[in-house]
Length: 292
Image (cartoon, rainbow, N blue to C red; front, side, top):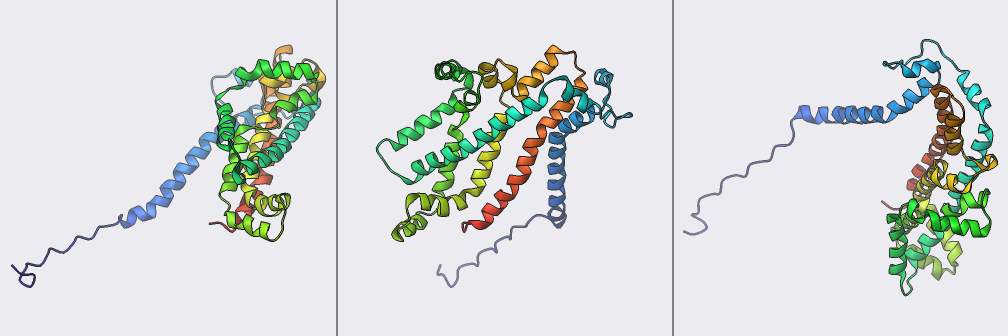
């Protein structure tokens, strides 16, 4: 049978897309799911906030009173007056800011070196850095403590800050961010006579602002919430951080749980404020980069 006399092939069936009602309902369903997840994450924070304004005996009731019938704002000044919480918050702020700055500086330098320079053993160095992520702090706690003790940094800010100044996750984060920058940018700058510090400051860092903001938030939050390491190197009240002060606040005095919740609410404010400030940098960094 020739091609001219061949029977015509059956027409192909067109694939039908989703029905019109699904296209209209899909954004609504997504919004409902997102709102439900947001509510689940915010619910403990709301409970902590409302509990901080209630009387002490309300904590032991079987039902939760989400809106206090009688507000007790005096829980906040009462809690702050029972211990040296201004000193604890000041210590946590100093340590967290120094750790954040140290991570941003050292992780950026290490990430730039691993991303843009090739030397014998560079892959091995990266592998060794990443392997430290598998070691919990409890494993390295004793050796780190012995080093800090030999330096004479017990009960001091250097002892609190030193082991936390650089993090393997931060090095990996900055390396991956710098690998996404086209190398032609850097080569063009070198041809124009720019030095490596100039390339790093004027070309690389402006395109890594989102990663720098994420690194700053993570390092500040981890240092602010750090409990085990300050507990190991601090034994005097003058250098206690907020987590140590909160635990001592609950042990040394029969404090109402509502006052402990008041201190916990105050402790969340710096992290929220930092996130609110750096979120703008994340959006601005994506706008400044010429990458899609």
